[in-house]
Image (cartoon, rainbow, N blue to C red; front, side, top):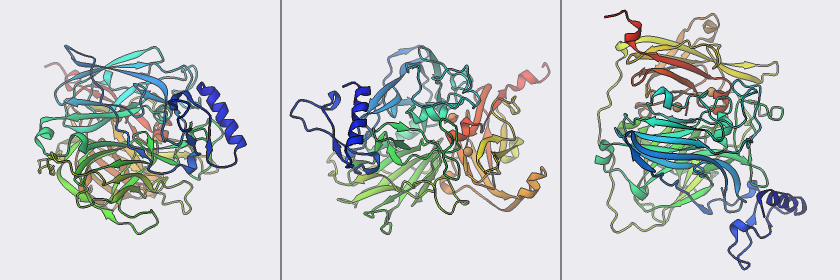
Length: 566
Ligand code: C2O
Ligand code: CU
Ligand code: CU
């Protein structure tokens, strides 16, 4: 049965079978013979939890080695994959036909080249809102451009939103890997449709390693597990639905943009409610929030159900977006906004036979101060760890990373402070018309010109009701502080800071490329703009916001070009 026929058949089943559970006919992809058991499909709302093992994305191997480094080839493909064993296969887009994409591993100081090829069909899985800049006709529906998030790469290889290419086209990107070991990730960045391309499945891990990491005795191999957290909504046929909403929970007219997307099912490494069997020992979990809009406030819970009194397993955070922290930080919960990463060590020893549920209590939207009644499902659970494997006999015992120096960028060396007011335009019913930075959209001329090698402070002034995870390309920055401001004086054009400045929490006091600015708050970061000259971008990483239009370019220029002849 081809997939169209199967979909029609499923429609028939759904129409004619009132019960939630129904069997369906013989299907070429999931039957080994006439005697094989027929799969029992369920509606997405009634899927059994924790019956599928956690998939771990395969590592991508290079095709060859060239003068400019190992050569990788990554094809973007449309394919189907099961997200849960009680669902039929879901149509997806993915790098190398996988969701999430294969993991690329690289070594500091060893450049690699990736040939990114667009082999997607000419029709998009989702409807495009043609009113959004960059997605207006005659822009083709299917456009992609991959970005290596968190990397310091030349502008031509950064995956700028307007450098998209269409099916049949490709791009060759050079990644110098001249930065510390970190959990990086790659994802699509095409202007005006990033939210749709990533939602379709275009994201994957890029683990950058270095000698310092190799010298540590942190868990590795089977004991190092990457976890990409997302949320998705599926229809009764198990197919992706992209259905964004306004702050009041209402849906926009069909095909139109709206400011947030909350899926009603948790997806970890491409699977819905998976489980992982673990040994009673330390594991390193490299956690990435790759959801469109959803924040996760994560904790490890021994309680049987989310309504029981939680019994938390404490853990350590050893790394942030851009690398290792100076010291492991003991935590009970960790907040991850879209695009943030947390490198965690969780110790399952002493928990033999127990089940630990990766749980979440972040409201959607976040922080939701203005909403008394939530409009969206909170995804209270994501996956299970079952401490059921015996301690492997040859298993060595892993340790925490040793303390390491983490030099602070010197505030007195900062040569400029730039202010960015984040605002949301509203119609008469209080519904979002789009977001902006300093009253500008992405297409407005460049206003930020930064000298190569210089240190600057950037202040994000959040004049909206939502928290925004602000992300800069090219750099890893440090958080200096967060502080309230007086909205009345801001309306008159003055930034008046009020209240006590808050320093970053211990687990944020490392290298970051994405940081949360809460409503009615100013986030101050400091960065050194080193590496390359050229065009880069910064934006909110809630993909709905980024697409419309909370994104701006910046330009890094060489000092020499500007100064008079020597
Ligand atoms: Cu994760 Cu501009 O990117
Ligand atoms: Cu990025
Ligand atoms: Cu935002």
